[in-house]
Image (cartoon, rainbow, N blue to C red; front, side):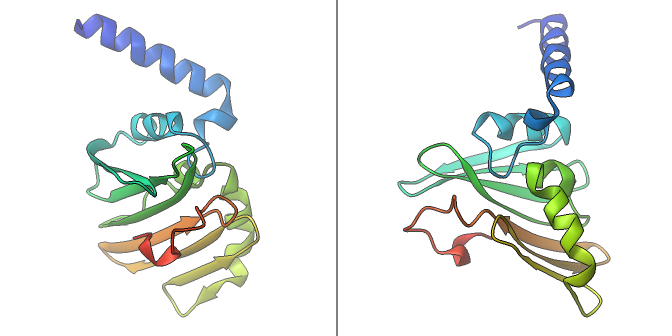
Length: 154
């Protein structure tokens, strides 16, 4: 594919994402297509895909060096995300439609200086960190496959 065709394809994809914000920010709780949108919008490089019988993990690395993993069920739904690295990822992007629920719960969910625990029927977020070491994970309880323990999300 020529560089011009790639640029045109990227412009079309980003234009579609901009015109439908629910799809552009639909990582957690959306379908497999949102993984590619997340990667493009966060300018992350794909690291790999680990496919298993119970779930598939798409791993990417942001330009700042943070590794983000998106967990997909066999049905193709993103049921969890996890991150670790020198800077926090764009949580608005990777939490998608659940970001506002997370944001509303954060002021009352802080423990100590660096730990945030949000437990809501629609989303669970555990995150923390300090300078150059940020980590976290989030999942949608109703989408986690019944044979997957949340301890596997890391």
